[in-house]
Length: 322
Image (cartoon, rainbow, N blue to C red; front, side):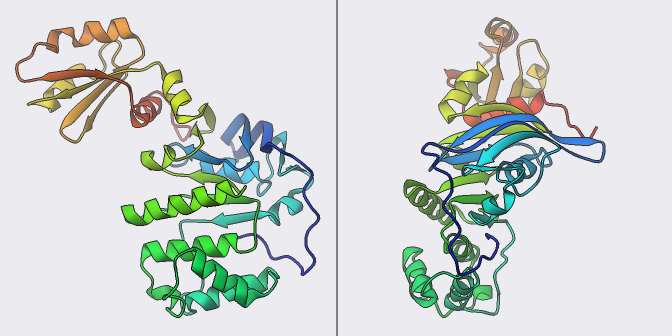
């Protein structure tokens, strides 16, 4: 959640019609380990920007630097029109932060939690503000229920309401749907898109490919390096992957046989099928040719999925812990 503010409203952010965040050359190290290296990027206002990558790859550190919550060792940039190095306090007052861990009071009701947050951030008419948020999030009928008794999906709605009640301009979501059922995740993303349509900028880290595909733009960060960013369509196109989907018997032995062959950059099971991808089309075709007519196997040539792209990226990215 944003830091508490006084009853006086903060001064308006400098006018920035299109760009919410623009940074160049951000680098951050902890000890002798470089967590983020020479990162430059731009985020549009009112957009949902997704961050993906392996655990420990620098996603959270990147997000915190982008919005002035963590000072980079080097680099420059602005967030909401303010300098991330010299005006971080002004940025923090305009940021809502929702983490994986439910951080509201378990022994207060839904209404009491929201009224408390409204008073903490000096929101005018806190009871009315809490009531409006309860209605907006579909929590009517649950306002008297203790927060600790809510299911994961309802806790998530309450946490989102608490983060957005003070009216932030930027919302940070750190793997917000971990452990939440599919319907609750879908409802959550509908609410996020509603907020973005109203002008809220959202930065979200996630491991779910279906959530990444709901973002307006995405970035893949691996062990401190920004490898690719853009729309989902652009990221898939930039990968230059050719993908075959194979169904039939004995797919495990086919996967073992093809792994590491020239042109085969990725072999991964997907349910009852096998995805085989590569960037060098000629080498890939040569490697799979001996297996194309194998009895019982059905080969289909199709466009790579976002998950294909990310699995392939992970496979060729060195771990900076090593």
